[in-house]
Length: 267
Image (cartoon, rainbow, N blue to C red; front, side):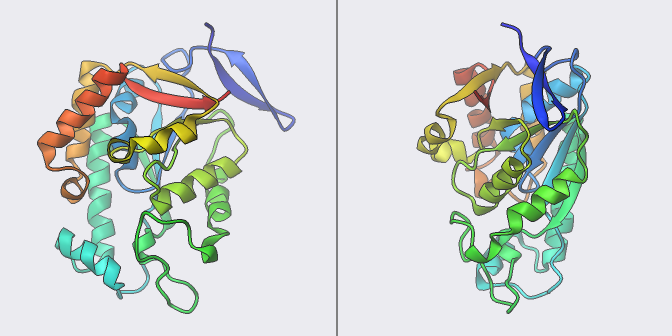
């Protein structure tokens, strides 16, 4: 069955027949990543394979700005205690280093936005907005998706292909980035959020209802690079998996059971 790429003309999108992915369609692929690890976690093996076939790939990370205050909420203090890093700026700095290492493994380029992680966000009164991460977006952040969408639009090229996560697991930052992506009014490729997909698989079906699915086979080199990329996030492994070995096993099992990485588009 012929596949396609999207083009925009006079405000409307139309299809041009092309391979869905691959070296015959070397447009830029942009992975919209809520945090400094999400793109690699959810699609690291395919990112590697895309790069190997000549596709330029970039990971755009949103919630990785530097907080302007040195204060931490009690909720954020728990995370910092686990990371062993007292200052928020040092956490962001060290996690960006991890991201650069992972991106190098996959062959992707990186761009960073200045939005704050939910654990650091405050309202105008200085009140902490979040005391949990698996929650609905705070009512005071109703304009945040639009501000993110504007920041994305400023960097996009007409032929860019966008990949975003569904928000499986209900992490508030994942939900907000998806909303921002959908405000762009462009075709989107969706991928499931890993490792939240492993923990709450029942969250996926409601997102994919009525969508067109495509599974992209990941090479053995891609799987090895995927695992190696995730290993670069040393600060996060213990909170996401029961150790490195479990991470390796779960990623390989996911690829084996599905024949690769699953992607969706709106029909």
